[in-house]
Image (cartoon, rainbow, N blue to C red; front, side, top):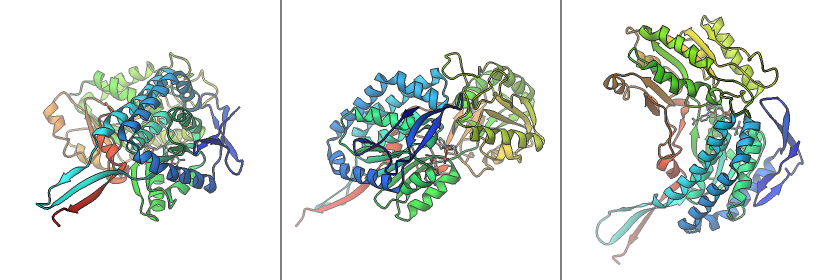
Length: 478
Ligand code: NAD
């Protein structure tokens, strides 16, 4: 088993206590990496290193910082094969997706390098004799806490903008795929950033993540994960009034209207549902399908699910790999059983594929005849499970869609665009996708609606979250 070290202050280190934990290959259940298990003292060292690097990195010319980020993007591309194989082995991402994910991470650094020079302050007119302007500054030492569901991308989407505008960072990746976070540190270490600009500490969220969130010398937390963890982090961060940008849970409605192009909708939503084993924050959590196309939608969804090859993520023919862990697999299976117990119908899947004895695999699953009030439709399942509810003209579809503690995004499919667009104002969510699902580097993501988060990630607005605007006012009429 490969033994890994953490990256603190430009050095590769074991945890101070010498404790370690192991990560697994979800396709086999085998232990693959031994990772340092950090504690409070390790977090303190990482934060101290980030604080010491801040004056150097934050005062560097923007062009120099951007150059360093372009180097990181190049290094990611040069190491793409190795990074993709880590995604395959430690997360279960099918190889073809994993390669795309790694190039996507390189693009994030390139986008941040190119965009940061255009993110400026502004002049504030205050009348004759005085000059006032808003100067944009990095927030400072930023703690980044990431989830397991898209490890390489999640680390890149936070590190790239935070670094581009001059912050120094302590990253705590999800424990389950810690090695992927440490690989990112390895890549960044090749780009010549001042030591301490990026630090990566590994260990359990409840101790290491919490130590970061409550640390008095951390200025900001950038977090992606569940709403429950988000609330704990906010409570920890409140003790020192930290800025927090939180990308949290969702249970996204997909409204399939009577005039939807069913084939086109399944090409997009079916892919979202089963790609990455459904472990996508933007995947539909519940489908409301109009009664007039309900049977057609079910039949075509089953036909689509049958095309999804489940298997070894290293095999280039595989479309869907395993779920990330035994614990998560059991949670998803629990939801399926609960759905059936509460009266929904298992239409397809719901079991381990017969040819796969080891690993955390589940077949693409379709649950139909669900109702809005069932547990499986109310809570975030976060797996390869399409939960389908029939609706009719008598239902208030926006009320159903909005009836959730979450408000991350919504999907709408209709060929009557004016009708679909009328829903935009009524859907209480951070993003509405009509007849598509796309997220580019220029688009932002995230929302401050209900329990789905606080603030934005990605795009110009996401980068701006990592800055503060200092008011400057000078009287020159003296
Ligand atoms: P999680 O909340 O369990 O863990 C996320 C991270 O927080 C991990 O690094 C974990 O170690 C750490 N953590 C756990 N407890 C902590 C604590 N008390 N203090 C500080 N850190 C702590 O989430 P997960 O299971 O890794 O990811 C799945 C969740 O992430 C889902 O709810 C999904 O919706 C959400 N998610 C949201 C988005 C979005 O953009 N809104 C994107 C991806 C995933």
